[in-house]
Length: 85
Image (cartoon, rainbow, N blue to C red):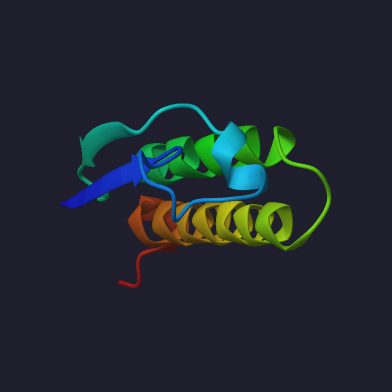
């Protein structure tokens, strides 16, 4: 399981575009299926849309792409048509 938190922190350490993210939302996610990886990718894409172009937005887009890649990999690994006999 992975516990996630995203959004702005209630401290003065967070500055810049990330302060415009929604409040922290905690969720426990069991990351064992492609559907859950796709949900994580979608959340990264959603957060990236709220940021101006720059390093923060690029990092979120890269994370989303990686979650999508992992979902593709998971789907391929669990597809019975791809199992070796």
